[in-house]
Amino acid sequence: MAQNAAGEFLAIACILRPQGRRGEVAAEILTDFPARFAQISSVFLAAPGQSPRPMAVEKVWPHKGRVVLKFAGIDSIESASRLRGLHVLIPREQRMPLPPHHYYLWELGGCQVVDRQGEQIGTVTEVEPTAGAALLHVKRAGGKGEALIPLAQDICTRIDLAAKVITIEPPEELLDLNP
Image 1 (tube, rainbow, N blue to C red):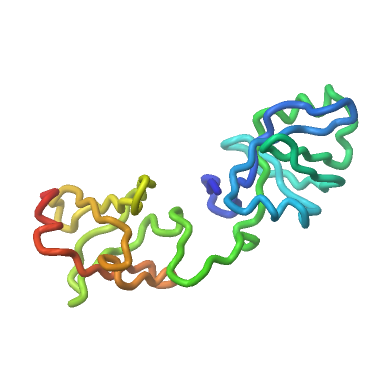
Image 2 (cartoon, rainbow, N blue to C red):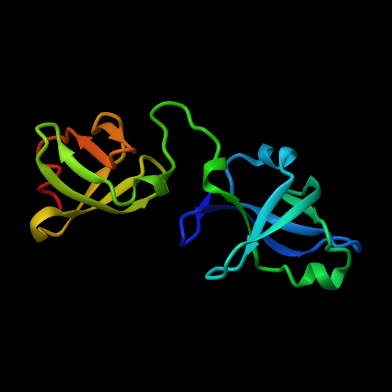
């Protein structure tokens, strides 16, 4: 799921084009939880940089790896065409709960990284998804450059999202690799 700039909403789909003749639209699924579309009755639509506007959802069904949405008040190909490129958003509070020790990557941005003694390592500026463990890009405290820290349970031993703190126990010399 992508997070919008304001941080209040999460994008769960992006409208690609009209689908059918009665105002339906085909959308690319952006969420890891596509089953959520079966229960959705209202969403918000917005282009990047715009204020989201609420929309009632009349029908939803899967189609060829995408989702087809029918919104209330959108009843023609022409009106559906005007939705092309808009993101389908939900309020951030409606995100799906994750099991213990799993996190949405966007939640880790801005977290303070400390070692187990509480010494400040730096601040997470980016989380880079990889084929293996994601990498935390950490701006080092005191202007010492950037450190790349794998988001692995052996290394990131405690993540407190409420306090925005990640406690790490790095292997020897990990922090010296990126001075």
